[in-house]
Length: 121
Image (tube, rainbow, N blue to C red):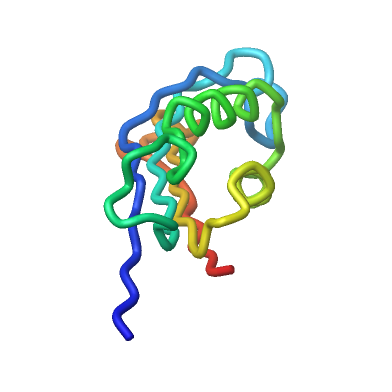
């Protein structure tokens, strides 16, 4: 029996937030970038209704709202986002969430720092 998966993808979402362990990070904030992939088995073939797929507008709102609440660790943040997404979209079979801090407070550091969570349900 053939089984197909669909993945809704949001890439390069940018948020200004106050995540971090250090007091100065909580004061000055930082830009963060997020990539999300939400996989599910479509209930219909073809998918013709927003009720049959995760609404990426709702995903964006959920992530944006969650980003407003400061966390010490990005690891905590991605795990909470994954839990909220599964709660809102119970048909999800897997998620991949990457969040990058665009300017980590590390002297001489020139890249980004981030975490990736991949979770199957």
